[in-house]
Picture 1 (tube, rainbow, N blue to C red):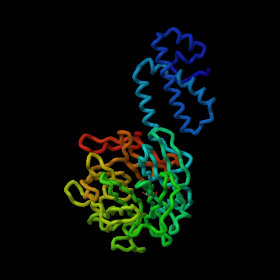
Picture 2: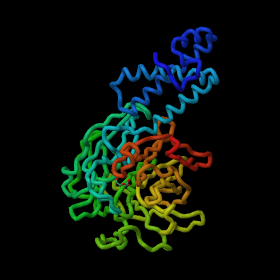
Picture 3: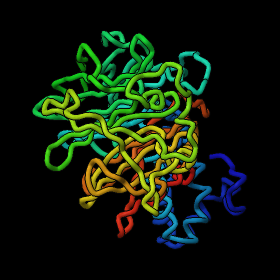
Picture 4: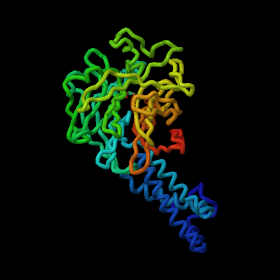
Length: 416
Ligand code: FUB
């Protein structure tokens, strides 16, 4: 046994440690055992973080040292151990779901009672960072799945590769998925060979692919970040769009303007550019109607303005339904919030409510929200694992809570 300089003085002399313990009340010993269990769990978590799964000897030494160091605290307060266990479990839900690849833009769904996550697969492309997002040069998708939040995560390998999409040029960005009549659908934005973002769809008989892409992009589609929401009546809608690198601002006259703005409409005091929505056809592979605006109103019932960077739509649309209301959530991009607005139907208008997730490490913020086994979860990403590199992100999950009035508690990623 080794001496521990941060231990209470009475435990620093190893030769007397067990002698002193034997004089304590048996309940103290009981608490010590409980604490040892807690310490084992903590070091298991630490080893997961450090990717030292094979270092069993490190684990053994760390546990002995850790349990001796914690004895005083346990004697002080029996509840402390319970509280710490709860904190460790909560922390686990904010660790990356996978650490051997970088993943981002998580679209989570529950299929057959299992959680499937459809993320972007971030890679190092060595493209310099710019406002067009050229450094997000992804080339394939991997799908992740798990039985439980906090459970084992399976990476199902490549589900769709850019080389198999006949019309694709570059940059496979944030995807989403849906299920209908025995078929799984993967929706994805990618620049075509003219460098214009379009949205494609691919199908599979399995939620994990491989997915076979349609030969052409969805007619009438443009920009990025498609998400498909199926309402309780079975009708599906696609929401999509993103300004700046997502090119939405270049479609203001119904046609792509290659020389258009690089950012937004640049009309500061006019209504901001909006996300788009279209009802999908019965086979959910095409638009069943002309694309409409997803209007977000302020508290006075006025559309949010271009200059309102803290609240206006930028990218990363997501729709979910809670207690009969429609929650449209999105990223504010250059102000880095995940915000939301509530409406009475899938088309809106939606009234701005607040922030779901404060800025994360990395420039982008992108999320999805699902209900699973009676709890609500926020899937999101950050760049902590890559040391802050914006184009190398990791998908995470944490619990989301509603207030009694249906508004959502703001999550601070630094407190997870
Ligand atoms: O991953 C590429 C892009 O970054 C996504 O399409 C955006 O939503 C942002 O997360």
